[in-house]
Amino acid sequence: MLIHRRSLLGDRTGVSNTALALLASIIDLLIYYLILNMANGPETLFYLLFLFLRTIGVVGDDFGQFIELVRNTPVWPLLALVGSQVGMVLSAAVTFAITWWTVGITSRMLAWRRAGKEQKREICTKKRKRRLWWKGLKGEGGESLVILPKLVKANEKPRFKPTIATGKVNKVGKPTDWRVLTRTEWWQIPKTQVVTLMKGKLSELVLEAKKLVPEGSYAELAKTLGVAPTLLRRIVREGRDSMSVGRLLKLLDLLGAPYEILTPHIRSVGGKSAQAITNPKFPIDLYNPEGARLLAAALKDGDITNGDHHFDYTNYDNENIRIVTEAVQQVFGDIEPTILYDQDGRQRGIKFNSAVIGEVLLRAGAVEGRKAEKDYHLPDMIKHGDYPVRNAYFEQAIRDDGNRDYENYRIKITCAQELKSKVKKEHLRVIENSNLEEKRFPSQAIKLVMRFTGGTEKRLPRELRPAYEDLVSKMSNEWIPTILKEEAEIMQETYNVEVVIRPKEIYVGEKRGLRGAWNIMVERKENFEKMVRQLDSVWKKGGDKG
Image (cartoon, rainbow, N blue to C red; front, side):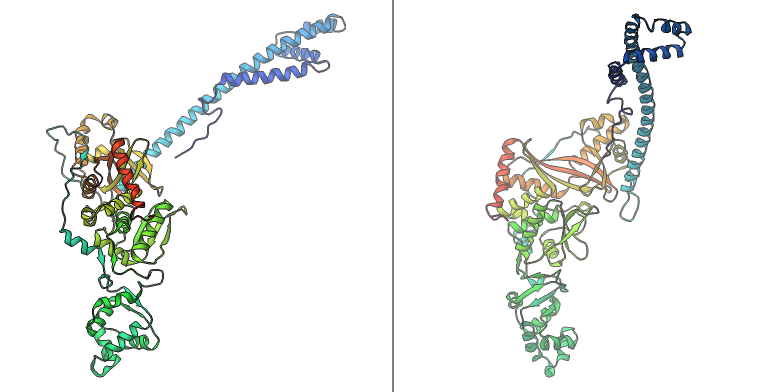
């Protein structure tokens, strides 16, 4: 936001030229009064008045001769006093007139100059918004937005109504399926992950397996496991305790041993020390309030990065960062996050450099990559889970992408999704002509926003209003993200409150492209207080602060 400093002369709303002229006249009178009280003050001021009047041609030399005649007479002091008083009035009047005229002319000139600058600034702002608008409509590789066929005007005028949750849930998978996916054993993590066992355990397994291969040699065992013979020798001779999951499975298969026998002997899992989870809690189970909280964090302010499946959590609130960090440690084991900073040096979040965390969250229903570019479901663990799991999920979801408004008795959760694959040419014209507001993300990146208010349609040209009505209709129904519909249904079922979904805005960012945003809303004091009591109970029963 630009902050303009006000100028005494440049900003005519601050002070008038009359006020300045009065101030100057008062100062002139004070100076005049000081001189008047000095020795020979009246005589000095009288002479100054005479010189001024003679200079402007009001009196001539005759008046000077008259002064010389009366100077040494008893009349002179009275004449000097009267003359000085007349001079005082005249001086104040002249000062007022000159100041009033000078300030008036100067302020007008500065106002014209200021108006020119404001006009240039407005033009530059419009150009910047237009550049951002078109740049935001480019795809990842800079490709242009695909424009769909021409809009067909709806026969019936669409009405802007909020979507109300029905309480019905779209069942995805059987209840028995989702519970299996929330529990992860060590042999179900990526085969490339490195497992470190307790001291001497790996050497013991290698020596037992060595007896089962021909000639009992390291070379034959190495061929079976697909490793170099030197690695096996180092495990036995130097006491190395680490091996990849894939090779450990081959080793146990050769021994005919169940995989579970290694679970109590695992000391850490991961590659480098910064990425390793020490004292991992296998089998890792997400079906608890802490696991539900992590799923909410992954689906809201968090991300599972493409490829390496690391867990990033972007949030500027230190309390939220602490809560998520503790939840990770309670579910997975001992691991410290990497701190992330924005371009201004502020802490913007944390990153867990372990693929194990990302893999476990993905198995349970989290989304890989950019969530706003995908339509995805609410995890089955939340749909079919018990009350404490659901309650912890929504408590964290509101922390990340929502808020509690205690003044207006309102709870909301916001969700954004890309629109560039959905909008038509006429929709784009509506958005571009809707007096876009310039706002900022928490990262301070600029976005242009179109809000759904009563005045938006009135400001549009008449020929664009049918397209606006169609845009509102689709935002209110067809384009609502699937997860938002399912969250609203489960929220209503869990808390027994009325839940509505309302379009919030459409915005375009330089990097994020064209997106729509919706709010899940719980309104009215009765619903608000009922839900807040239950959300707060997460810390008393099974929560992170319990």
